[in-house]
Each structure stands twice: as structure tokens, then as C-alpha cells.
Image (cartoon, rainbow, N blue to C red):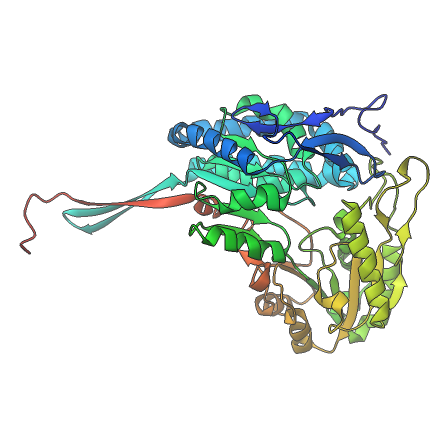
Length: 507
């Protein structure tokens, strides 16, 4: 067990500035209107720094800087851009513990997750896209012996990125790595709930990027996000967040016919077929862990397996074991490496989750474990904590249909394959799903039948760089991760060249 000291206290490996301005053109600049907002840690509810409150004026300054930097960055060779991404990854790896602690303190998640998943995955994404852009090639097509079609990949120019609060660094990297690799300049707006993690990251790597290639404007959605997404000066908008906000982003961008990629909400089914319990072996134990994955990152994951569908033949036994497994989740201080579940990211999110715990009870769902706020004392007093909660009910309930974004799973049974698929697809969302079975045919057929962009099979919550991630239906447009992301940050230039000296003869 390792217990990291809270940032700013004796023995801490992380300390924050008392104030964070906007990062524009390679330097920190104060907000145009001189306003700031407090940034509390979910660990104890206490503010630890203040952050510039951006407006349209700040967005314009950032766009000026990005447009000034974009042409030269776009002309930089793929090899040179890749080298910078690799150097960023190396710098992050050398400071992995600091980044992990910084994000845990601001977001509330357990440091065991930031150490083992969030930051290592972010590092790997920079390395992956460094390799992907080096390997990317254009195409040549011989139309006839005198005519050739060339296809070149060109950067879009200046792109806007709006980042969520549940994975402040990793979600930023998912967008930054392909955008920078493709040769774009970026104006990024972090979530107002977690704006400082990306600035701490920037303090470690800013010297590696040319001024203006990356600009960060802090602030609230209406004040800073809307003018950024609405701007005719951006060539693309990338957004991760809830579906209702995604609709607004689409509306803003559509005024300028600006392309968007949207990674939105989910209500992911996690399906456990009878054969999972055929033997009490390692696979059975793995499936129980897969059930408990709803508590990863306090359930604040777009692909949270928040609906568990258990086949009727083993329903009682498997559910009893799953409840027992869930009750073994260790709550505690987020900076303790033994802690498995930390604090919700904000007071607002805590209140939303508590309201759904009430809704579930009012709908007649049965609470099998959890269901309450956790009031820690001592240095955690005032923090935003909730018990991992298992509801038993039916798929028509709001707790089965609406995204809670907390450590809450709603459980129901199904009769057979067709029933499982019907229940799984009975949702507005289609981001992720899980299938657990020992039968390869069942696994394949279920994976193809479920309407979701990613179907984990006998695993859950793995996010490798070389696997496309994105949603069907109300869960979004486009994909994150995978080399196809380069296409989202590039446009194709076609040169159709005639090498014939003879006229066509039309006129």
C-alpha cells in the first residue's frame, strides 16, 4: 500500500499554482474580463486553486494564435511531428506518478486507476499516433496511360476540442494525439469541473510544442464552449460528453457546416449467459469482476456497464456472487493505492446520482447493496462519496434507461439469446456492451446483433489505442482511437493530372 500526500502538503510530489490563466500562443495570459472561478477537489470539497473564466474574447485570442501557428506546423514533416509526440510520451512516463496524483486529486478517482490505466494509456496513445502518422501513405491511381489521380492527406488547420471531466488527461490525449500528429493546431477547452489536470500536464510538456500549436481556454460551456464550437474559424469540432450537450454542439457547428465528432452517453448492457456458471473456475471469477466493473472510475464512464442482464438459469447464484464481489470493493482515500472507489467528480454529479437512487426506489426497484451517500470523516470530510449500488428491476425503469454516470448497476434477467439481444438493444444509446459466454458461436452472434460501437467479449473496460471506439444511435458520431482517427483530422487532396499533350477535342 502507498499513500500519496495530498498536493501542497508536506511530502507531496505534486503542487499546484494558486491561479491558472489561459494558455495562448505558448504563454499564460489572464482572462479578457478578469474573472476567475474556484476549483474544488472532490476528495474533500475544498478549493485548491482558481481558474480563468473564459469568454468569446479569449476564444478569439486563442484562435488567432492557432491560425498563426497552423501553417508552419502543417508543413512540418510527419517524422518531425512524430518525434515530438514521442518526446511528450517520454516526458509523461518520467512523471507518471505526479500526473496520476494530480488527476486523482482533481477528479476524485482512485490513484490506483490513474497509475495503472489513465496515464499509461495516455502515454501509449501519443506513441501509437506517432507511429501511425509515420506509416500513413497517400495513394496513386492510374486512370489511363496518360492520367493519374494522386491522393494526399492534408491537415484541416485549426480544430476545436471540448473535453469531459471524467478522464481529464486521457480524454484530452485521445483527441490531441491524432490532431497534432495530423498537423493541426488546437484550441482546447477542458471541463469546468476538472480544468487543472491538463494544465499540470502542460507544465511538464509545453516546451516541446511550438507556440500556438496547442492553446487552452478555460471556462463554462455557454461562455467559452459555445463560442468555440460556433466559430467559423475552426475546421472541426470534437466533443466528448453527455448526449444533450452533444446536440447543442451539433447545432452550433452546423451554422458553419463544420464537421463534428461526438462521443456521447451510454447505457451499456453487460450480458452473462448461463454457461458462465458452468464451472466455478478462473473464467467465472473473471466474469464476476466484469460485473463489478460498473464501479470503475466511480461509474463515471460513458461505457459504464450500468445494465447487467443475467440469464435465468444461473440468475440467483450468479447475482448473489456478484453482490458479494461488489461488497468487497474498498472505499477510502483516493490517494491510497488500496482504494478501489473514490469520490464523484463534483457536487452536482453527487446530487444527480443521489436523485437516481431515490428514483430507483420510487420505481419499485430493489436495492441489493449500497444505495447511500458515504459521509467520511477526517481529511475526507465534505467529499463526494457514494456506495457502489446494485438495483434489481426491469428494463422499463428509468434507472435502466437513463444515464446515471455513477457507481450504480441495474440488474434484470433474460430467458434466451433473442430475449437478451432485445433487452440489450432497448435503449436510446449504443456506445458499449459486454458479452460473457464460454460458447464462441454465442459470443460472435451476440456481438454482431447488439447495436453498439464496441462489444467487449469476455472482458470489459479495455481501451487499447489500436481499437476503434465510438457509438451507434444516440451515442455519437465518428470514432476515437485507432488510426482511422487521422482521417477525422485530415482532408483528402486529389490531384487529377493529365500527362498528355493532346487536346480532348470537346471545343
